[in-house]
Image 1 (cartoon, each protein chain N blue to C red):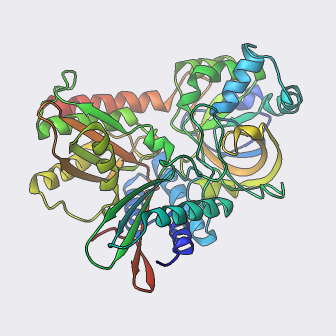
Image 2 (cartoon, rainbow over the protein chains, first blue to last red):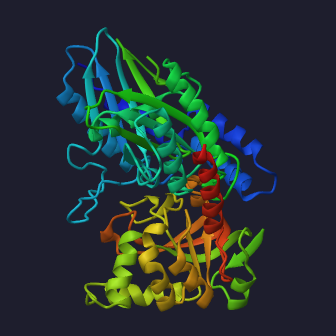
Image 3 (tube, rainbow over the protein chains, first blue to last red):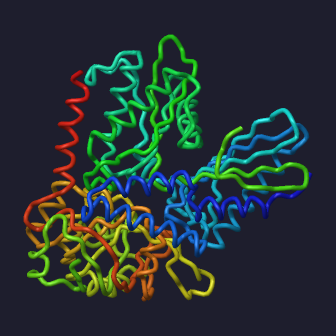
Length: 295
Length: 206
């Protein structure tokens, strides 16, 4: 089994410093929709300039380099223990090179570990064995400002008139976007998980954020929901940074999970405009990186 | 674009209105969750006696805070090994977490500008009116761009809080921000909240 530490370090560098093209294009289009001279347009101008500078200089796009979330899909025969060690070593090296901010804080002592290594959940690593010969590693850097506005509703929700159906989902998602205002660094992307238990749903809502902006949900009902929520979230007028404006959200990605008869959770992962995601693909001796996290 | 150099005079603060774009110059101090807790407990409410280098640190910080700015920011800093510090990424963090403390900290140290993102609430707005002071919204996530306006890292205090939580004394040149809470009781955040609430009510009526 080969050592992927350096390749994973490069995955971290790319993810932290180079925004995926679909996200950058969406921000560019959002800028053009805002009125010239408005605070919203100014914010997007600054954001786009920042993206260009970060890429040029290999500096973090945002200083909050977030919780690193790795999803590793490996063929049979790979040691997940060895891969975990390589990922952790790459994270420590990336922190030393200032691609990442030291972000792992002990919850009782308040001590920052200084190298982004905490307990087994920091960085977060998920392993799954898959068929075939290709190993893929997806990385999402999920910042704290947007993490703090992620939320979960248990339906029915009387106050919002939300029943256990798609209309109920729509109502709570719009409420979540309103609650978030600009705090999650709008404009953002929403990952929505319908169903599951509280834990599985949060993970699924984050995995939904890995989908490219231009893909279409294979489930027609979810595809319709995504389009409608994108339009209606923007009708709230919260705008970039919460300054007021036309773009509050530039992507909505929904999925379903089987649930217990007793439970109906709607879980919303809010991702800031700096939607930092990348995929690394290992096939035989070659390693490549992709802006798109598709099968 | 309005050019502001710290420390700010009362008159300069009073002239600022919600929506004004500003470019900031001069010295400021970063401070977020741990810093506000430390300032409040040790020097404002005095529920915790000063320890270690606390007294030394606060004496050095006071003149910069008076009429100056506190920046809600946990930077990425290079040169930690050599102490030749350089800001690499330094965008704002969410300000609302400091709402319980901010007004008191501003009053105590005479701070005239709070820089962050997401805005703050009634207590801070009241402090902005009485001091007078302003809340300046930096662009969340614009970390590389803002770091390049930091021309010098002058000092760091309470580094034991960790790099993001330490109080970094920095000099900036043309740091971009927008006034979103002014000293006249206006808040862009309250306005947008109310407008989006009305829009939400319309969308949920159907």
